[in-house]
Amino acid sequence: MNTYQLTAIGFDSLTLTDRPHTPPGPGEVRIRPHAASINYRDFALIQGIYQADLPKPFVPLSDGAGTVEAIGAGVRRFTPGDRVVGHYTTGWLDGPFHSSYHATKLGGPHDGWLAETITLPEDVLLPVPEHMTLVEAATLPVSGLTAWTALEEPDNLNGKWVLIQGTGNVSLMALQIAHALGANTVLMTSKREHHATLRRLGATRIIDYRATTDLVVAVREATDGQGIDLAVEVLGGDQLLRTVAMMADNGVMSIVGFLRGCEVHGDLIGPLLARRLTLRAVSGAGSRTQFQRFLAFLSRHRLRPLVGHRYDFHQAADAIKERGQQPSFGKPVIIINPSVINPSKEAPDSM
Image (cartoon, rainbow, N blue to C red; front, top):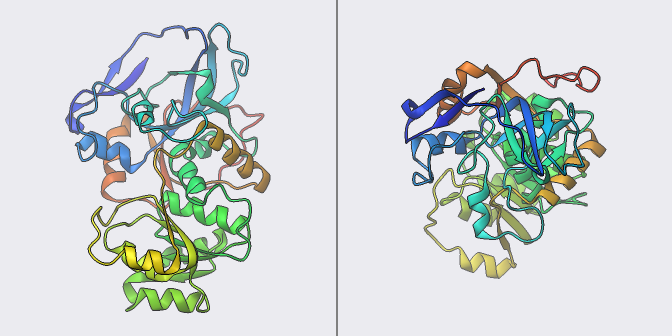
């Protein structure tokens, strides 16, 4: 089978190799992927921007979905032909997070989805929602589940104000989830060409941050003076201080990313204490149990993620480079095995 391996830092070390097919062992499932999606993490690992010391070689890409090709002894939940999606942090099945789980992630250090077949333990696989395509399901394990946990696995956001920064994949899914639960959403973006789509996905207010002199005042006005109850913070850096100023009393900020950096210069503690704000770190996306609940939520509300550009398997290196250098609107995917489709179950595509 053909598979990409990262043998050292840099795209010159992302090589296409041939590996023999091996039968799945006890408790294992061999999958033929239809699609794998690209996260910024994949680009950062290849370039050595993030976790440059990860043991190599490994197969990149953390997110994917496909059909079961073969099962090992003792596998009970899946049979050949089933549509499955993989859980990202394979060691985190249930319960609270432990830092040791970072070492169990797919796409580095464990082999990921950029291969014609992948073998995984039965426990880290889940059925693809019936209303969803394999391409759509392939976008969910990292950014989709991160959005779900950033919103605190919501059961009721009705009437609350949720702040969403930008139009990255975590932000877009958080927007859809919050809207489905009746939240009011404030979305900050400079991309006017996407406003109509963002309103369709659930944006109550859209603020062009580049055309706005004072973002704190703009958010306060957008929320009728109330402020934000829950913020999905993807920027970090000194933007965190502005987000704090936008919050309502007892508000929660879920720290998801650090696009503006990891250092904060200014008074953070004072405003947190004054308004009893909470900072939550969201890392590792979530547990398998949380992923299961997230997929059930998507099924109940018939939500479908926004898919971006599609690439062929032989375009993998260029696809990952483009994701790192110019993020797309919607999550980009690589089609690995185009023939892996179950016509009786595959729903119409979202794009």
